[in-house]
Image (cartoon, helix red, strand yellow):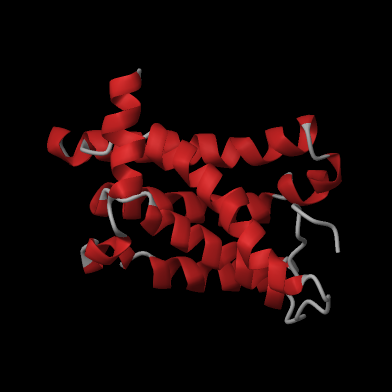
Length: 174
């Protein structure tokens, strides 16, 4: 287990996102377009900048949780860092398992820990956007082999959602 952590999560954290190939980011525009279309259609997104004196702290807290902690687990631990060496089919399977676990985590979290998130985390439209984020982050990790690439994608998504698009901050109630 120690060698798996060292060879995957630790190595993925040591790999700079600035060395990631451009194709690591290729799904991001598609994810943005899909999430904006679904989010506005479903009423999950509204142009509503957060008005709080604590807003400047949110990017920091949102970087740690959910972005870094979730990506370290769902990508850095669940997907072997060198999975592409085992073939595309195995990489797709690992990404699918990671994405399914990521999507299921949200309702499970709401039902067991954060009961105030139940309406959001059980919303099928929210889960569709979560699935698209999981696919995007899994792909970016497999291609880049850096945990930081999906962390950046996840962090930017949640930060923009909470600060500008009426998203509910589930870390600190403001």
